[in-house]
Length: 161
Image 1 (cartoon, rainbow, N blue to C red):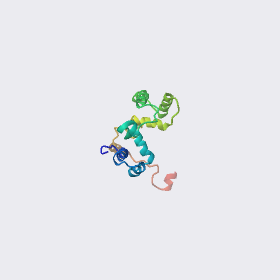
Image 2: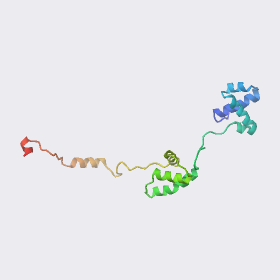
Image 3: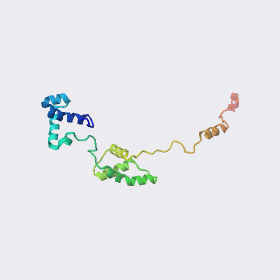
């Protein structure tokens, strides 16, 4: 129990220990450990079927509802990566069409965005300014121009004549 990876594993091992060493009833173990009665019985069942390793439970997480494996997704994106490196425009809509034809059914755009994020693709936008931009030279150019005013100050007759 001291080497348990997480709280869930610790609770499952505690169920087995209380059953083996303390010989407590199922209800008392469930109340002591903080698990439901059915969960305690499931832990014992796992232990009897698969031993101590099975009683520790399966790891959580993972991609259980995937359309393609990561390697298949990478193969799908490889030609598009070459197009992008050549300077061609690659859109999410074109990637979504390829993805849908590959798996044979429609998927939302969010699926494609998650695929792109998983493979570290990012949206490249035009740069906001030129790389050789010099703010001081720009200011000096603005100050060097003569100021032009459309109307000269003077009398009314001079403007209307």
